[in-house]
Image (cartoon, rainbow, N blue to C red; front, side):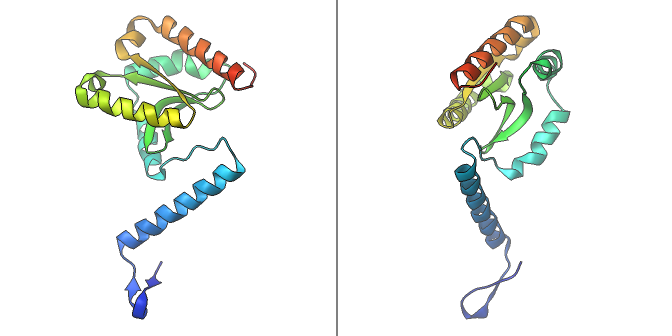
Length: 162
C-alpha cells in the first residue's frame, strides 16, 4: 500500500504500515465487540506462535489435553491467543483459562509476569486457574476434577448449561 503525505511525499515505510495495521485491528476489535459482546480481542501476530506451541506442548500440557480436557463435554482450546498473551487452555463457554506453570513461573520475574497476565485476563471477565507442572504429573485426576468442577460452576453462573 502506498500512501502520499503532505506535499505528495510517498509514505510506504514499515512503521506507517504497522500503524495502519494497528488502527485496522483496533477498529475491527471495536466492531466485533459491538456486534458480539463475548468477542475477545487477540494479537494476530501471536497466531503462528500459538500454532507452534500446540505442536510443541510440554509433557504436562499433553497429559492434561489428551487425557482429560479434549474429552470434556464443553470445548477447550489449546494455546489460545487472548489480548497480547497466549494461554495454555481456554474454555469460552465457562470463560475459564487454565495455566500450567513450569519452572520459569517460580522466579520473581515469572511471578510478576503471571500476576500481570492474570490481572489482564480477569479484566475481561475470565477466571484463571493455575497448576504447577508437578501437580499435573503427580495428581492428574485431582487437577482434572478441579477444572471440571470450576468449569461447570462457571457455566451455571454465566447462565449456560453444563
